[in-house]
Amino acid sequence: MRQVSPWPDNGVILYDGVCVLCSGWVRFVARRDATRRFRFTPIQSAYGAAMAEALAIDPADPDTNAVVIDKIAYFQSDAVLAVLSPLPGWTWTRIGFAVPTMLRDPLYRLIARNRYRIFGQHEACELPPAGLATRIVTEL
Image 1: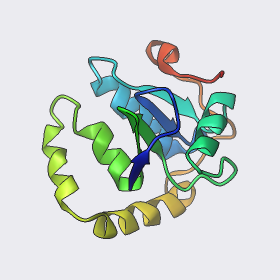
Image 2: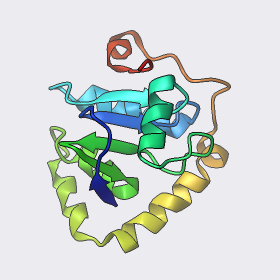
Image 3: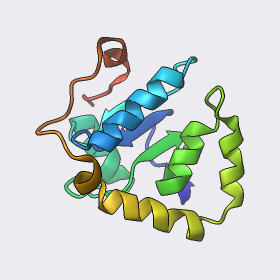
Image 4: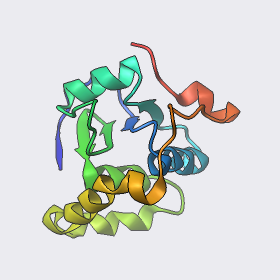
């Protein structure tokens, strides 16, 4: 799912900062993003909550990650593919866009609904590793 974004910043990935899977996703992307195209914001931060509300995501109960690329907001499986496909060694994931979202998104939603139970959650937002701290946006 994608929509024209009301959010002014580009290349920002919104994620659930207490979710172990989501924090792992951020580290995975950051390690592979050699051009530093992406920045990250936990939904629990002031910046992340404002971005979530602008994108019609409930900050108290996030059901998707999101990314804004070239003024387009991507959600659910589209967000995953939009982030992976420009990364070195991951361009092959573009073929995922050929699969209809009505087939991709149910799997995404199943994992999202069960992410805490399967992967766990942190007590509070995890502190980013030193090299990643400059790419985390928390303040408006």
